[in-house]
Image 1 (cartoon, helix red, strand yellow):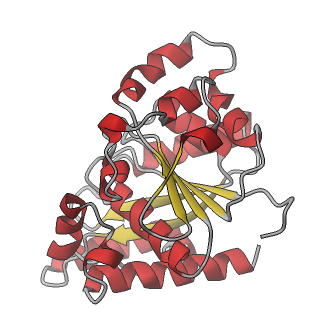
Image 2 (tube, one colour):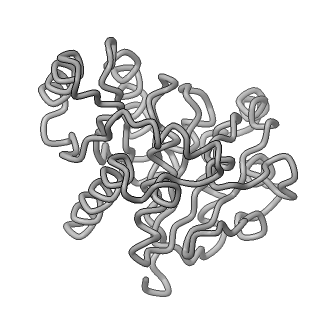
Length: 261
């Protein structure tokens, strides 16, 4: 990366919970780090699942995303390196749960994260923001700070529920706060080839979003579900699993996208 080049900031977001949002953030970041991209993950979800998935103890993190968001700490001072070369994290905090309320009482509350990122020269190729499963001030801050959004959509009934609302939020943020924001892509997750429903949902999503849907589909995979409890991304937990190979394929697609920009 050139010295003066800013990292590309990408939010991973879906206001619906349980869709593979954090799993996608963690494993896409890991796959890119594996090909020598310098990657930083900002865990903006109060649940802190991304932090835990990298084997980090958020209870003992000395500095967190809450302090960064509130302007109390610089991002560079809150970075924690993972066991994965080229990949670091700023940990979540339970205090983030009250950040929506605290930010709403500030002037221009949408820009706090953007200011934190632009406050210093961060030597990364990519910054991934793991957003909370809600369209509140935390998610708005992430979208305002980002160049693009990747949206995981699970291959289950009511898959598009909530996505339409997220699209409206993206449009509002683009119109009012961040004209550069774009939908980078839709990731189909939790695909179960044994059921016709997954096929139908996948087709519905493709019909709705067209070429914005990645060809790489993340399967429903037990090993992917197990990995966070071991504090490892699936690429470290079981590299040969279908889930790991799917995220490697997704990372290749993202890199091809980036090469065209």
